[in-house]
Length: 225
Length: 260
Image (cartoon, rainbow over all chains, first blue to last red; front, top):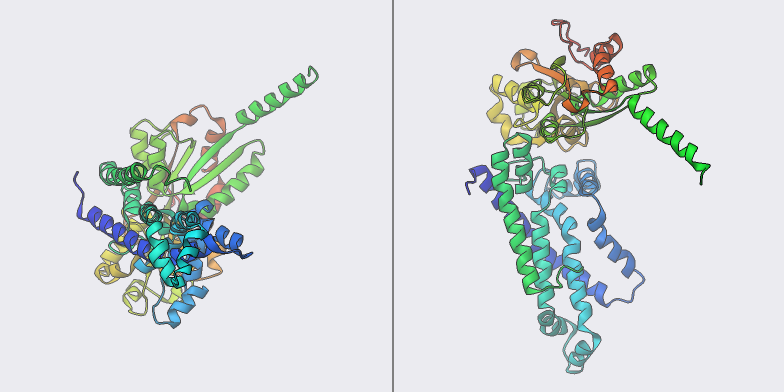
């Protein structure tokens, strides 16, 4: 399999993006999933619905709103400018923000399922042994929910690798910055260079298959969200 | 039940008659977005029985899709090379007809672009410049040629962001995410954009001509509506709309359609 330097750059960038997004999602998604799994609040359903939105929304909708919000006239854009960060569209970190929204349900839902399966009893038992809430989370809940963390991490990573529409809307196709593998393939096809498109597309196809194969072999029920 | 039959029969006749009356699909390059909408509207007035529909996108994508037998009856490309290739490969049922020459302009929604020129793009105050992707978008190729011809490419290249097609590029500028863009004159002249910003016409001596051409596809060989519309493109009404949107017409060299 022969990949051009441009293709390699796109692949490396894609892996970087998916890695950073997965790390951020672990930090952001875990408390959300924990809260959704345990709360009796009337806000549970609306918050759960908001988290699940990217599952059903076309990426173009998300990309369109992000482009407006993060632009110079949008509230996010004005915030980032006043903070001295500048504008987020056409930057790697802009893609990170977009991808975090886009992949959020793939982190939260498997974690929520894992946390719900814990049951109150285990945690109450830990509480009677004077484990603090934080201690209960890290020493009891986290180890038991480890398979859930694995599933959530793998799905978030793989889903970010497969992202296209949001990146196209807010990326600007800059080599080494926002030109990820899916966009690179699109460009090859548009430029009628089917040979190059085939190479990179095959890499993504094999990668995605292996990820899902590993997940299904290891946890047959993992994808029943 | 029996009474329903004549009704069903009539409906079927209507539907099939409808199709014969000229249902056809036009795949048009994104730079035609507004001009083609207007031409289609005129066409419908003159041919109320016909039901054309238009899809806008990048010329390169349509070229690929037509090779895979996409259901397009007419293909208007921003680069005449694409329909020529299709014709050679047997995907056309008409000769390639040149219909216009496009022009590129600097356009901005945040600064007065009429006071700019290409060398302004090197100004450090301008952080992002949007062009269509030169790898496959005809307007992007011409933008790159113009920047290279003026020796500005190396200075401007780090600021470039690439739109998928020329309308996508204009959208980057319209939302203010890129301060300046190189877009089609046809888009800059449309009310939706001309309300928001001014433009500077890039001299056409700086780039190869943007010769545009269309074909009737092979699948539309027996589609009377598609043929009618192909002929209509040569009419005075259609040509007037093209001129209004800044296109120069074939056979009228020197009479450039730009009205700044």
